[in-house]
Length: 198
Image (cartoon, rainbow, N blue to C red; front, side):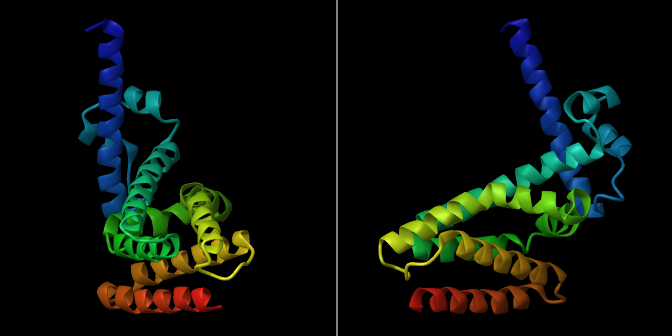
């Protein structure tokens, strides 16, 4: 193994350790109550290593958020892949998203801290970068296959995303999250049925 390759592997391992520890702390304590000193100590790396990989705590948080978004996007895609058509795939993916929102780490990182830490505009951009294009493609395919009525794709994609984000927030803040998820899922099914029947 070359020195360069070993250095690259060590660097990747350090970054991975920082993200893993930061995720755990952000999920348990929230962004405001997570100190970078503790992240460094628990990851067993130097402060310099942290700043080699991330500009600051917010940059570290954004990297953790991005990993969470990717995990959820994969879950959504996998749920959709089991379905016979793009419209059913959208509904299955939406249900998978709501199920993922029962995870306290997802609630804290994506739904509670991300809008506050990033600001509304940047949070929306981050969210859209992971889901919007796939959503628009599935809607366009659904229209093309005659599964839903012809309509403007962009507004429908934004309305569905907005509904899903509000649904996720409702689950995250509910006293009984399981009951909220069941109720919200039933509403989402009716929403999708209404769009399909339009």
